[in-house]
Image (cartoon, rainbow, N blue to C red; front, top):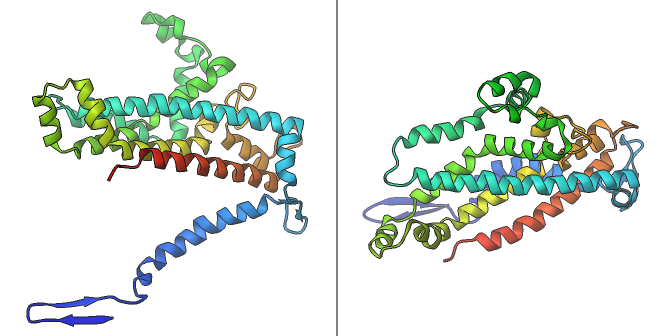
Length: 309
């Protein structure tokens, strides 16, 4: 530690390795709860067996089994495809409407902004199990059919969650409805940070609202769009709770809503039907592949949306 003095002030400046003391607590927590479980999961993907005493090193055997076994490969490809669809629906509706609502709320002529922000954000405060239960009731044609018929919407009384063609789309839209408040608030904060001088100059030059949005607002909030995209990408590829709350861990009906999260749960924790014996090594293999996919997806998103210096 160096002590610097002069006639006006007294200052103490850390030197050498003392800066390390400030990051040690956070580094310790990160290693214990993030880095170690990740590395151990990668290690576990090269083993088979349910306990330490029966665990056996098989190299890439789990990866080979996942892609060559007729039953497992079919279920994995099905879950992977559904996860991609789930992600794109959230990107289009959740984040797309988030930007739209943020732009509307931040306009100068908008009134009751706090009210609309609260209404949009309220669903994110609900527990996912509560959200799933409420929407299961609302979408149940037996429970809600009479009410819909009385207001002239009887045609909507259909088993949306019980039909293979509509179940995944409906569950994705439920997820969009619940979590739309988070990207909306992030976009609102980003739009409020745009210098008003830029917007005033555009207005003086006669730019339309669309031109102002596409030429000024959108480029300036590009880093925030990138961050929201990454959060959506990571969260959707790890989604489990919304399927558990609205359907089952089997991705009912007939695996139509099966995602990588539910597939991982059945393989590595609960056991896949009909044997129902968990395989932690195979589950770790699914998690490892998901981690690689996320890593390969996040890097280009960061590069494409980083701000210009």
